[in-house]
Amino acid sequence: MGATETGWSFARRTHSFSSELTTILAGSPPGVLSLAGGFPNPATFPTEVLDDTVERLVRDDAGVALQYAPCEGVPSFRSYLADRQEQTQGRRPELAELMVTSGGMECIALACQALVDPGDPIAVEAPTYLGALMAFARYEADVHGIAMDADGIVVEALAERLEAGLRPKLLYVIPDYQNPSGRTLTLQRRHALVELCRRHGVLVLEDVAYRELSFDGTALPSLWSLAPDVVLQAGTFSKLFAPGVRLGWAAGPAAVVAELAAAKQTTDQCSGALGQRLVEEYGRAGNFERRLPAARELYATHWRAVRRAFEQHMPDGCTWSEPAGGFFAWLRLPDGLDAVELRAAAAEGGVAYVPGAPFYSGDGGRDELRLAFSYLSEDDLGEAVRRLAEVIS
Ligand SMILES: Cc1ncc(COP(=O)(O)O)c(C=O)c1O
Image (cartoon, rainbow, N blue to C red; front, side):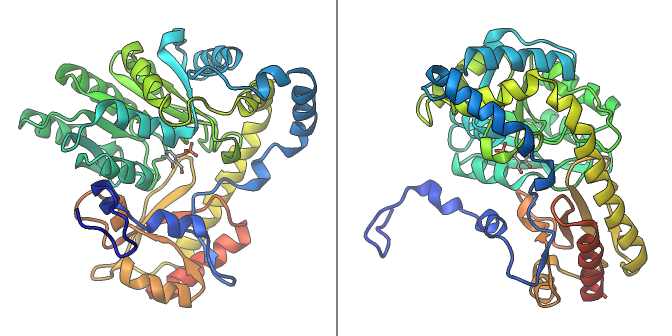
């Protein structure tokens, strides 16, 4: 590898960098209504219940909350997490099957570090979460997209690939209100998927980032609860509490969790104890049950505003997904339109979105785009969709 113009010789893995996530996190210029970033709505942040808790933790529990923690997590928080898995997913992990991570994204990166050598195949939904695709590229995986339809990943399409000899180290799936498509894997397919993966010895990496954010409060069984022997679950408190705590979990086969913990020793060694104790106190006091219904209702109201605006303004030839939860809708443009090319005109017209192509490992997504309805107000969402429809027309 040659030296760069700065004189530094960067690693081969740096060549995989996609700037799309940086663009999203940087935000939009004034006057542009952004449907780009999937940020939780700050109205859902539990600010008013946290003051007292933080004060109490710092006063009474500084020895734990401000100290290094065990790599797998603060013991009392890990035990709370196990209780919570049982409560929300109907299965209680053994201690060795569960660890704390610094968000869902770290769990994905740890799974790569533990399981993926350069060139190893990974199967993903097509399209899938951009952050995960970027991690897979960094670990130099050979990523294979598996077709989706309105009911989630097409299990027969995966079966065909496995029967043709594909041996993925991981199958990465987001079964609930997927980022980016908003689609949900049906119950029947969940059973078929874990059965297929068990038969072929494929480890499923299940990302449940939005699972508890259905619009109607219901949830389908997680893949991990159906098949804890072949599923590693990546969970996060970013959408349920706040991304600022950078807290999540990994639940899966003990041997896999042990390797993730070993990998974590070389990243941040432990997730922040203050955040762990904060979420534990918050959760043990019943605040998730108390507050999640309002968050679900807020996102449901936002989606209804977007759907109304779609129906009112979108020209013929546009179609969209019908999310039952989460933050995202997926729009298909009329024939011949290209979402990347349209982006500049959209910004001119005062609206931002993420084009579909970066969400695919291979080709695909030219005529698709992702719209996040989590952040803007209802009025702004309506106006953003109207502006977008005008640009498309
Ligand atoms: C599907 C999915 N997984 C994981 C993450 C990462 O979340 P965290 O903040 O927990 O790292 C996101 C964030 O947007 C996401 O959409």
